[in-house]
Image (tube, rainbow, N blue to C red; front, side, top):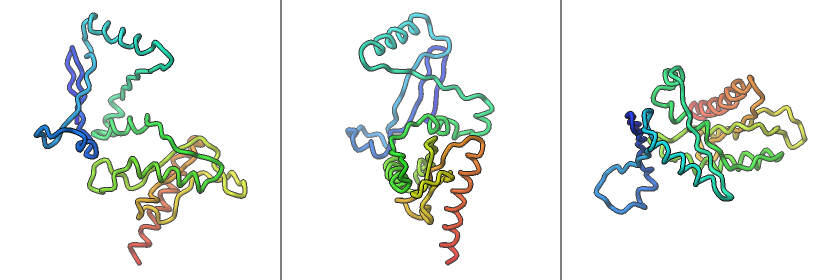
Length: 195
């Protein structure tokens, strides 16, 4: 995958997901890709006008669309390198899970969602060992205790069904909560490996 940028055009190239290649007719390509085109930095006014009119057409009617340009600074790229795009897109991803006062059903909801989006094959570059879900919802235990900041299934890192974590975004201590919950998972995995 990659991006080609010229004065006139920007082309984002992305491989077709393996689960979607079965939907394509056999075109004789071993690795089909999708191209997304948009105007380049120095696009002529007429071309830019075309995109403005397209945006206006999209905005007519009951459904509204928002086109978002996300720009990562060079410091972000220097830190994340080749993972910059994945990092930014992951942060923009909106998830349809059901977080409620029932922490068990909330964890099940996140884990079920993660099974749909996380490839099972560990060699897949999109595979994650743990899926972390951050929420602003006030997590609580069944007894009503709201001191809970995160939840996971012990030993879940070894199970594709339970390799998920929910953490509550409470501000600057979020990183501590994330490290704490992931630490539980790593500790359980090490116990299993030592047994």
